[in-house]
Length: 510
Ligand code: FES
Image 1 (cartoon, rainbow, N blue to C red):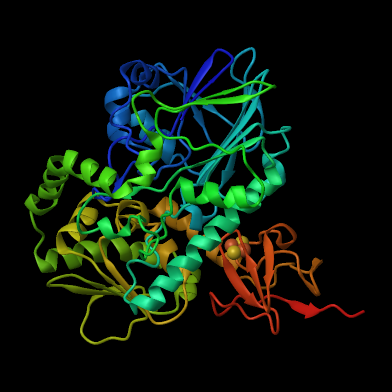
Image 2: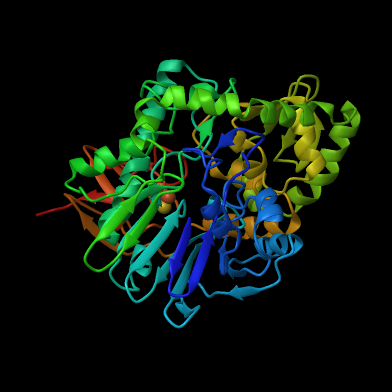
């Protein structure tokens, strides 16, 4: 997104090069923008990167296309990873913001960046941008899920609210599971994504909403089935038109279908929308398969070159791969006793010819023989080698989002195992361990209670302490916290997503 406000042009998360091992492509495509717009994109006054994931921080594009004169608006993250990456790309001008605090960037324009720094949202953090000038205020929430919605709207009435509504995860598609069950899980996930987005929309109450930050599309034939075309696919990636339909059903008729190249002008009287010239926007969605097949054909050479890079890379021997993982993971495991306790079972990484066990109890990485495990990832050997070679500190960003693997787990979702794979550096692991130790401290004061429907319950969600008076939804005998979709029985409070996170709840007495 390029925001023109006052005398500033703020370029936000310019993503052009497909991400995650050539899995995610921009949808609708942005490789056919007109030259005038491309020039504007390449010469902003300010650059805002919400977080370090590959579909937001496109290092290849920034390296070649964006002026180093741009002043970077840095979110107030606990670590310096984003700043370091942008510095290594040649950016030298930074404004370090303070979480949620508004600052002027020119005579007419103010910005505030709100950060979300839990490990689950990526140990590097995620963020949302609020831009205000004399005529309007815009919230670019993208895929950030701030627990404190009130802070986001504290800057005043909002004209335009951009936010994510579609999926951005590998679950449940990669899980080894019966296809009917998986289809149900995918539908439930879509519903919970919509519910969460609607909660933000309702609370921020902007004049218009722009569904954005996804879905990606999948052009590799191996992954093409994850595009949602007829709606019957096992996919969590509905497109903008589906969410706009939902918004219309709740009486919102002014929300906006934006594609790359769309211009939105805001004045106090009206919001006008201009689609890019020569593109039939309706056709993109009405004839989606045809559109995607053409896009696929246009990028097929790029994709086969990309794939050739993985398989042409030099191979580790089995023993080298094992010893490299041992030397990398074991010092990190030693730093993380609380995280290991939270994981509570071993993890098998299975490749074509080498099976490696991460023994979370002993803190060792072992050759797998027949030890017990509670999690399993089947990863193609060349991709495992690629992430090991890069020393990828966050496997969700570098690999899991590619969906190029199969997963299995014996029990419920366990966020600690993914937090481990997102924290494969000393700096990250120290933060992750601290969060795990704090989270597993059940002595924390969660005594405040609220009334919701016919029930009295703790105000803070047992998952990540979202305010249940805002995010709690009662459906029959269950409570769903729509921030991340965790569910709790209203009969006895037990959590349906994780074993050790009960909700304190009782029926109201009259
Ligand atoms: S805070 Fe994550 S589901 Fe409630």
